[in-house]
Image 1 (cartoon, rainbow, N blue to C red):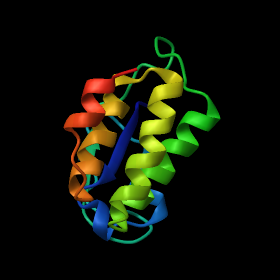
Image 2: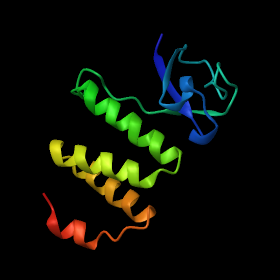
Image 3: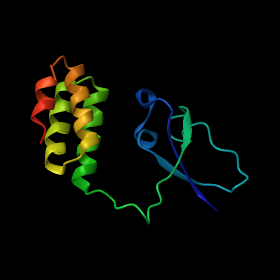
Image 4: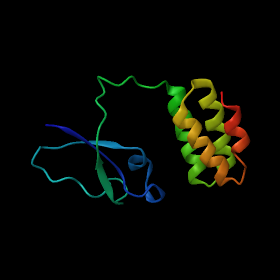
Length: 119
């Protein structure tokens, strides 16, 4: 039986179980589930990463990602931007740097001077 991954359709109305993603063992002919088994909110099937081909990130990277997401959900754009920016500088992660710049903008900061400095 294949394992399928699901996650919340609306992160603002999700529980801890369906916020990131969760796995369900289902038959190929079984219909996809539409509701989180824990909170009942709508979920969608997502494309899974091939775990054998993907290098898992360090636990510290995952912790930073969760914390940035929590700050964003709470509207704490400056906190999210600062944490993402510092971690992006350390890891040289361009997508995280872009996310930091977006959060700085949402917080009302000018980012043109931040972009010029680069790494």
